[in-house]
Length: 250
Image (cartoon, rainbow, N blue to C red; front, side):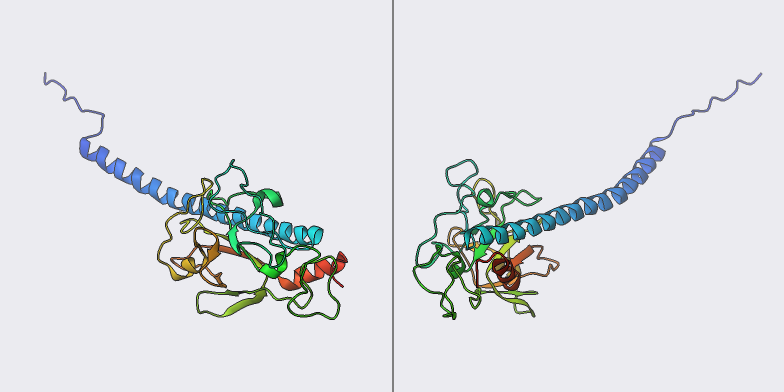
């Protein structure tokens, strides 16, 4: 009798390699959408936080008659003064027009969903002590008694779609920026600034001079292939409306 041939029930190395390649392709296809979902959630969470920060800034103005000064960007979390607005200069407002958001003063989150601090810039006239030693520069009919600024005061920032693009908002008193996923130019909780990158819109939104200033007063808003900042600003009309409602402005 012939001995029955024995057939292996296992996979050959070639078959195993093919299976692994197929599994790798399937996992890659699943991981890419998952990564996109995570980033989408981070963007949504940061945008929600920016909305809350905007309301906190307006609430601070209603309570104190002025907008807060920027916190020092280079102070590490836990060190004295971290997240606290410095006292404003009596005559002209804050010592520095820009820095990071004074999160501790406002009672909001220190960082965005990527773990970086928010950049914050504010117009000096909106930060003077109340009552101010000098009248608002626009010389209103009635000088405000309970606010650093008047209904005719104008912010010094302009929001653009992109650098050199169309105008979104003018005379903006204050702006808050998350530097997005790539974090270019953002300050960390250790008080260090990340690499600035090369995108013109991102450079336009970043802090300069050791975290105490910004390149100019135009702020880019619309994300592009190389620009992922999220931008929020205080609308002058909404701010004035809330101040009038609170009887801080005539």
